[in-house]
Image (cartoon, rainbow, N blue to C red; front, side, top):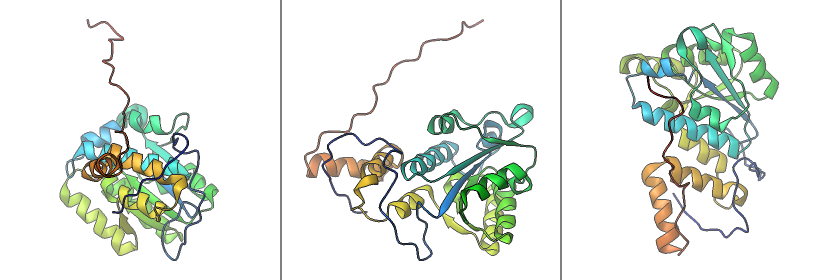
Length: 248
């Protein structure tokens, strides 16, 4: 992946420049033609996930959410049985979308929930970048039905997980057979970026790489500092949390 260094007059703030450069479509995702749906990224759902590293699922889901902010892509958040079973939406995701309330459901299949479907329809977009827990139910069921209703679904596999590898693999085969397309959080981000000359989102994408994408991000940091002579990236200084409640 090509890395270029651009000089900017000010610090890039995610989600404020919004990828204004027009991308060609021709079957590809663009910031203008899709909506992101994040389904049931909740504690109890992650507890039961065993086919994939759970910290990686959190990392990739947060990265996808941030990318949606960078490119001003609409995002629909939804949760299931928050109070009785699944727990709150992960705080890491809430931090990316402060003030946005997830659509609460009782149904396992979000496509059975009129509020969720209405939120998707309101965007006017027919391509859905979809991820959730668990793959075999909360991802597969809405994917199959949304495709039936004329939507094009892109399943972000590294933001999904299931109770076993067999369950996840069966779910992915099912959605592929229905016509869904497999992607990753990084592939979606780069598909939205498309051209390193798109300077309006370049710095924000590089920030995502350095924060969330391991060796790729370290490679970016190396190129910036050792090849181009840029100053080292500074992350927020760590502050040790103080106890809010006395231990009993």
